[in-house]
Image (cartoon, rainbow, N blue to C red; front, side, top):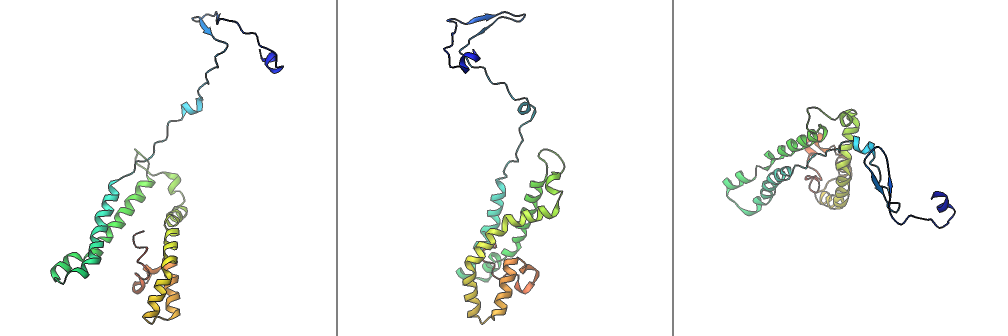
Length: 195
């Protein structure tokens, strides 16, 4: 059959399936039927890699922390009642919740699924782990800071800031070092605080 096919000769096929006799039960072989592919033994040996499920309630916690912060930002303009202002403008207390959530998510992503222990590959190189976390955040920080930089420069010039001070604050913002300088901790922070 193979030689006939290779030479493009007509192939003679029997009109009915033939029987192959062996020690096993007889099998009917149809010459027109294609052979079923054999399962790959490597694929059978590998268990399907389980992925960690997404924890949707984390987003709910983030909302529960963000909503009072947003309300507090606008409460200052909506009432003169000192008691209400004191109650609604304590949003800086909630900021710590974001650090707790970030720490939890970092721990969750580095631990093994269904076991006690860490994924050695993820924590074997702490410097690489650190830079992966930074680079997951930094491109968006850079883009939003660059987009809003003209507005910040304009505002600072209107408040008589020197070009040297503006350059220093721009450096701190783009290098993400402003938290190391308490007086500059919240400079140019508005578009990126939520990242």
